[in-house]
Length: 218
DNA sequence: ATTAGGATCTTCT
DNA sequence: GAAGATCCTAATG
Image (cartoon, rainbow, N blue to C red; front, side, top):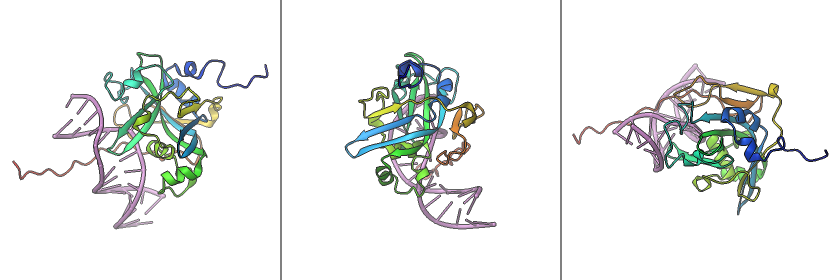
């Protein structure tokens, strides 16, 4: 039994083929890697959130399949990348078998490879720990955009891939409500490595102010 | 340290 | 048409 161990003895895809709220805390510590012509940047995940299309009104998939969320309804182990707030991308790991939508939003991580490239992509970040301390920051640091929606995270030859590690011990993992959502705001499906400096700051959802109305053209 | 407001466009109703 | 799984900067204590 001297074999190198990943998670259990199943393939990563089988490991992921469960509800996101079970998978999420076990993804902490795993490494997400993106390789481009500019080089490789990798982050060790420190903060994640579970979203479930079946039971969770906050999930993009709760109201059924659309063009945007289609990847979530496919097999596990693929990337669901979405565009939000007119300027940011966020990336999820699809869990559950085909036909059931459930995914883990990757909220933060520590850069373990390609710090120089990550800094170039995130010039406004002062501290190293802030390079990927938020879902859109993580995507920026890694150079993830729309083109990677549907990427196979379980294929080591894929430009965007994940390396699973043995789950962190339960006492290292903290849980609490998710960030920036209005419905199901109480559900404690945000998980992070307690005390890690790269974990993003908690913010409750704040509805945006409406743009001033131009009433002159009545 | 904390708060408030703006940026910007896709998505679904 | 309105809100959104966010981030940055400026202003204030």
